[in-house]
Length: 299
Ligand SMILES: [Zn+2]
Ligand SMILES: [Zn+2]
Image (cartoon, rainbow, N blue to C red):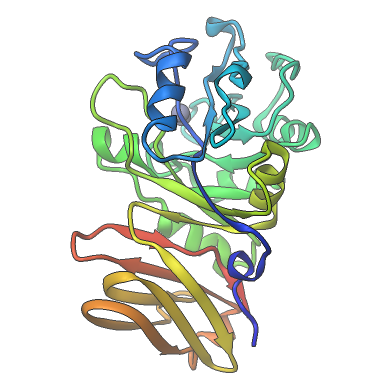
């Protein structure tokens, strides 16, 4: 019986935030305080991803000193290059960069910068596309990206544009094999932390193992609900989760299936009607409206 990749993978789930800033770029707390906040709040890992830009002297913050035997950090950055359709600098999340990653030359365009991050070992996600109106054509140009942020918490808090599901669904419907992630992108100028995280299935808490699992899609994303299992058997999808008010399976265009109730912890949905679209992804919504998102399952 085929099990969704994260649940089939060996190891256990580790909770992490892939996207957050510090005083090394434009955020209000220093790296020490940011790492302590996540470490003391039940997170297993954090990627501090300051803006890799000339005006901040291209920081790749060395967070290795904040690692303990039950908390680790992944070296990363949010990298920028010209230009989206609306003339803005791109925002690309790169998690798993070397500390000596070379500065972005002014002539480097976003697709080649993303490819350079991938070649350097990073998991790369298109950050908060809904926040600054990244178009489908823009997003399709970043051919080496592994993922797109489906939820960016600071974009939700400050601009009510945290959710990028519609762009992702068009890309998936056109056959692009993406994964999706939820992040905080906290800057600490207002209450913008602990809103979106990933649960990564890995055999260890080593940074390299976490980055490999992210690239392989062995994770899900959440604002709070837990996914405990997803299994596809023929045209049947089984989901196990923490108590939910709805369990939804989404496919190409309008195709979907859902179960509704109070405190649902399992649901069996029919994939009849979704199979032709080639993929299904699962969303679980709890009584407070908080969501968990699986990665796409290719049928
Ligand atoms: Zn950004
Ligand atoms: Zn950011």
